[in-house]
Structures are given as C-alpha cells and as structure tokens.
Image: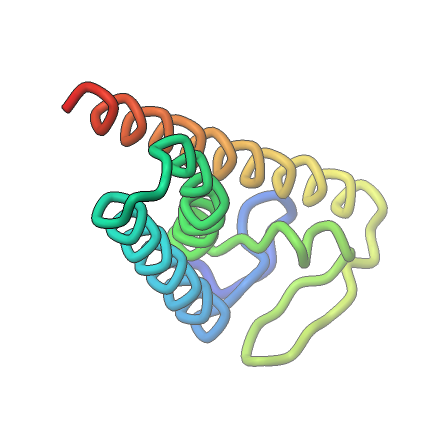
Amino acid sequence: MSGSSQYEAGVCNIGGSERRRRRRYAAVAVAVAIVYLVVVLVSSLPTLLLVGLFVPLAIGFEMALQARQAFCASLALSGEYAFDDERRQVADPDARRTDRAAGLKFTVLGIAGGAVTTTLVYGIVTLL
C-alpha cells in the first residue's frame, strides 16, 4: 500500500513529504557511491577500498525502499508515524511491535542490497 496517506501498523507510517525526503537521501547516497567508485578506480588506491561502497549503497537501498513503501524504519523504532509534516505517537503496543518488525525488515533489506551490490561491483572490477 505504497500510496496510502493513513497510518497502518507495519505497512505505512509516512506521508508524501517524508517519502520525497527519503528519495532525496537515496539519490544522494547513490551519488556518493558513484563518486567513491570513480575515485577508487581512477586513483592508485587499492581495489579493496571498494568495500567502502557498502555504506552509501546500503543507505541508498534502504531509503529508496522506505520511500517506495511509505514506511520509515527509524520512526517505527521510535514508536512514531509522520503525515502532513507532523509526527504522532503510536499508542497501541501491538502496533509498535509490528512497526519495529517491519522497520527491522527494511533495514535488513537495505543491508542486503548494499552487500550484494558491493560484492558485484568488487567482483567485476577485480575481474577486469
């Protein structure tokens, strides 16, 4: 339910402005990763430094996923949701648990995406 503008535990906890913010974060993270990759490739730095791509790529993946799914992991961990630029508390303890589990899933997916992409880039560069 990525187009929703109503809080749903574990499904949707941010509105349009928060989703746009996460898209910007994702774009910046990917740009940082690209610049980092270019710097390592055109300099005399060791190829092993390409593992540093993991951080911006993981952040980029997680932010893009959060924007797409209208769900913020950090808000979920803090027991909040945000629509119309206003943060509100999640009152129901079951909903907070559901949100935390969903937030953890998004973080794990971001880490996995960053790890896989970093591994692929490193593998391709070392083969060339």
